Length: 174
Length: 174
DNA sequence: TTGCTCCTCACGTCACGTGAGGTGGC
DNA sequence: TTGCTCCTCACGTCACGTGAGGTGGC
Image (spheres, chains in turn red, green, brown, yellow):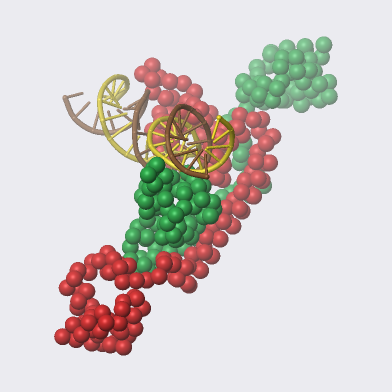
């Protein structure tokens, strides 16, 4: 006779798994002690081993329960064959995900917001990245110093009107 | 402005999915009508499209939410690369399941109960297969008539004591 | 008496689906 | 007025994990 903890350890499962199997009627201990402790015998342990193996095939517990109460071998082969098909479908779905991820890594534009970049979105973005006013000013100064032409293009790209672009570049050079 | 039903249809998702995304704060409609209806604008629709793509990679919604609030491109590539690893691990696990199923189909004994067969288990099994008392009697009669020696061996195999084996075989011949 | 194990609720997880009961807009 | 769509709860799913609060056995 085994207690729930001992059986869990020998089977390599958790205690709460066995409690759950008892609750759903998948594995009920063959008796209880006077104090209400679950007492599992060798037959229970053998049943648990079959459950463990079938569970590793990915079958849902409800299906396993049915298989264990059916006459041996009557349904099992059929169920396992269809499980093989389901596993193949799951693998195919995961491969599809892999392909998508690779595509996204190759063309990151697919990930980005399709809405056009503008001044408000850009500043929101920099603020989210931890830029305060002073940091933004330094950023413009660096940009203007190291690549003035690109700075101009970038400000135009954000849709900022010409006169304000000129103003920004002026204080960036100070 | 789109209602929840229209947005769901154009995105190919269910209404309850959008309700759920609102609840967890993943996609909140930019406004509500006077009657409390959710009103989604084009920005909301664009965000939903990004969510849909990322969801197809298998990322959990909590992760998607984080990615959408982070500056574009800052984390995404790293997260997607690790997702690629997780997908590979999942595929490997499914392949393991496939191998196990094939093994079980090849050696069905692995599926069967290792506990010794005895009289109680045997009758339980026959009852489960739909045998009533009369059917069991006929079964013994057939067994005795067509293969008396194997009948004897089988009864011994079940652990039934000699005198009762003799008794069963006697009424089987009547 | 002290640990360790056991017990039974009850609630949380993940991403929704499914009613129930009620209201808004054409 | 009739449909259709919308609203907000609340509960169920699957296979457990994690406490809380309490008891048994060496």
